[in-house]
Length: 168
Image 1 (cartoon, rainbow, N blue to C red):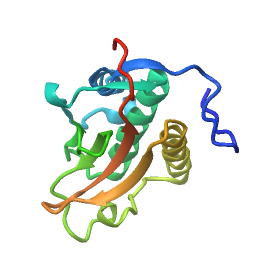
Image 2: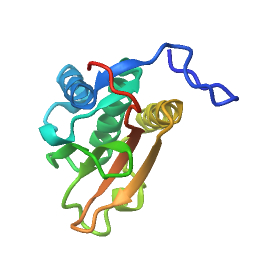
Image 3: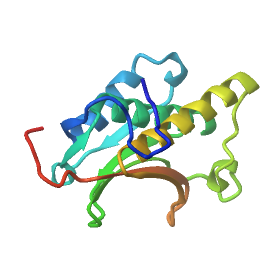
């Protein structure tokens, strides 16, 4: 269960230590079972230099990253690749970025207005995006929409790096 407490205490589930690269690769692997992602190429860019140990609920993070990819898949033009990137921007956090490259400047996703096919999918995707936001907050992180200078848009889930690394 994903829960957010008003006092900011986060999820009642115990956080352990996990690998950021493992979170991203598990999220991408679970997407192969999702019929909504058929004919939607998902590319993972997980350089070893970006892997870090996180003090986090691994299952929640996997779910959050997978939700962002599903959200992007429903809003992107069919056949448009969806990229999952892991990076360390140098601010004590790791970034899971889910993006769609090369969108035209007038595509709704560039302004954060994804073109969802029907109301049921729109509602489900709004819930999925909200849950990803809650997971980010539960881990002391954030979720933001960014326009890419080279074109397209991406959602960035930022999670703080563990202060004292355990084994991932």
